[in-house]
Length: 388
Image 1: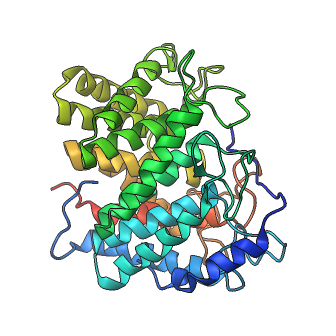
Image 2 (image 1 turned 135 degrees about the horizontal axis):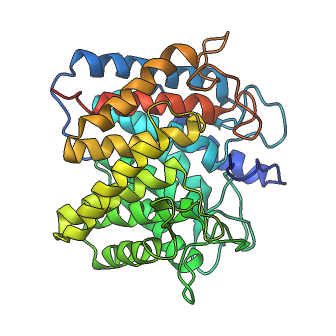
């Protein structure tokens, strides 16, 4: 089982961060794809919405840092630099987005605005050749190590913040993420998107988040540049970045191993591009990849909540587009098990969805990302009505 980037504990500009976040004291306000918002949620959606709201409330209670008005990476972390990285915080961002999309009350929409405004503090304007999102809030400097999939996941959360609030400010934030991926992450000589600024290899995670970000921005803004970026990324992904032996996208250009949270964003991106542009090859490929992914990863997911939640988020979005009941049932089946088995003795979602303790290769103990990833699954199930 592969892992994401290691936890970062590097020296930070704590003074700068404290001042910036103090100006956003509302960030810890009470909580809050193209699916239509129902006037009244059905009972199944209401059930999942209640679970999501409880999960977000617990995240606020147990991971909030009143000193810096943001969220910690781990429970009650007393260290000097405890705050959540992008990878730690993105499932909470998506949870808030989905809650507000499912139920756009003033309180829920305000909670998205508050979190999204705080998420802008990860922007490092000193990065070159253009600004991008650094992993830790307040990181500043041209040489800060950054991850290109982080920028994609963060950008996608900003796109959903736009869906939840209607504020074009968050589309600008999302475009910044895409611009950084294109200008700093894409390899103009051989194609592919680097894993991070150290350029160790071309990463399927970065390809997945960057391609879907470009696609959703094109669908929203109708920018020819965004469409060109999506198609360029996919052209590489469907050749060099594809594992013919597995029939799915590879984790990296050095490995043929597929991972679920890489596949779903790329499948959904191609389905949406087909619908928007009429290129039937994209639809055919999305359909075939869906079948292969469902067979490969099965019905009981155990990669890790923070990975599997991304897979299910975009499989649910695909369900919203093509109404394939297999996709909804996949998400709902895992949510049903997680709702009881993932709870620890303190009532937090800190175990795997099947009730096992998470290994250190998946997540360190007591992490925000583990709680929030499970919460995000409930939140996205609140957005989509179950099959008739």
